[in-house]
Image (tube, rainbow, N blue to C red):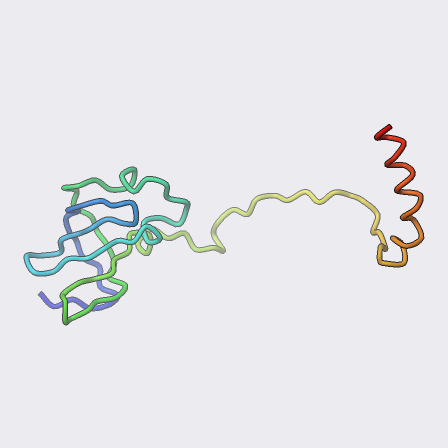
Length: 121
């Protein structure tokens, strides 16, 4: 079969390593799903996403015709677009803006050193 970049295909997982999962697309063609192409989120254990012998649907993100090897992606098929993701709510502290600089440090350094000495002793 002729494969090309962008094509969505099915293959069988033939091996799992810490850096990715190997997939057989057909008798002559294999590919690798790199750990960074498994999921949008953090992947600690690839075995939690795929297992040896499983048939997976993947997207070909690059194909080398000379070696018949493909770079594959699972996350390209299940990707959540960033605009659809829920953003965490960030609560900013309500502190007044401070104007600090070298002049402020120069003017207060002696006082701060004395205060520090009192808390240490």
